[in-house]
Amino acid sequence: MQLSGELAENHIVVRRAKDIGRLYNKSHFGKTLAGNVLQLNLLEGVYLLGEQKIKIVDEKTTLSFQELVMRASRLIPSFEMKYLLFKDLRNRGHAIHLCKDENPTTFQKVLSAQEQATDDVFIKAFSERDVFSIEQTKQLAASMKKRKARLWYGIVDEEGDITYYEISVINPKGKIKTHISAKGKGSMLENRLVLFEKELSEDLLKKEFYGKPFGRGLQLSLVEGLYLAKKDIITIYDLKGNKVSLKKFERSINETQPDINQRLAVFTDLKKRGMLVKTGFKFGAHFRAYTQQPEKTHAEYLIHAVDQSFSSIWAEMSRAVRLAHSVNKEILFAQVTGEEVTYVKIGRLRP
Image (tube, rainbow, N blue to C red; front, top):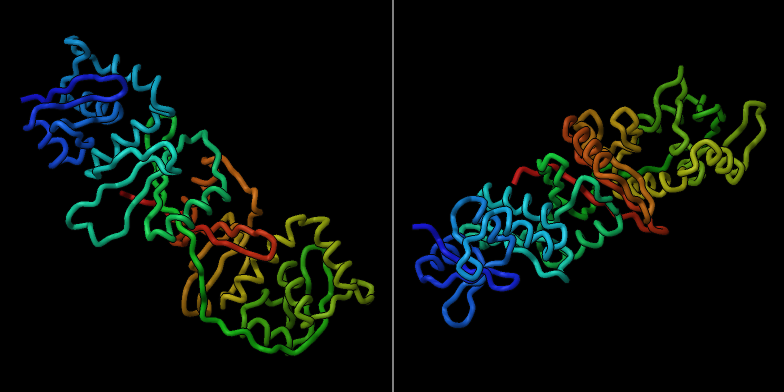
């Protein structure tokens, strides 16, 4: 027997006890009201009508799917996007409720009896044309972490397909101990520094995986060179053998790499966390990071250094996450705010 409901302003009322039992007790639709009635929101009504599980009448006139969709579209902001996400998750077996307007997320998952011991799950819906904001994402992920809840993003593309990500704020840590290194000289080339002292070069390469061999010496990236210069491990000289001040060295790097201080902040923070840090260029990222020596593990993370106001279209975000996933790494966006670095992880999800 088909379920039956009545349209009442901006919601649907179900009165038959059997229908209420099937919808509320079994499938977690709607909310119960005084008088033994069940109230469905329009999103739930559209879903049930589209699945041909309910008949909805408005003053004795049976509503068509189109009529209810048009009404819901006028009353629910971003209805189409929310409906497609709601339908997809419901069809995957996830009971979800629409969050109140003041809630920063779109849906909350209803945990089954078997899931009661797990964390709550909140889902935020996006269109592929929406803009990703690192600050908003960090704040939302941090608030979910405090309440011990998981955060999912559902991105609806122009064909109605949905890509899911799990978002979290993490504290990456490695097992690499820093050591006191001998001091030496670095010679400036155009895009890198070269160390010619064999002992210093071997020490930096073997113990903390700096640079790459350059003859019997070592070539360093600019961020590695600047980091070691600030640690007073190397002194910089130009091609004529003249000593270069740290400020002049920074200015010269900044001319070709304006985000060097941002990258340096992330590089420095990762080193403090016991990580080995190398360029991530071939993976489309600023850095790749190891928690152990490279002979023991592959790089676990790809890391983008971004500022506090960083934003991007979802197509670019999708590309970065997909690439990291394809090479078995996790992608982290390292947001630099003053001297603080916060790591936001975005991982592919199959709900």
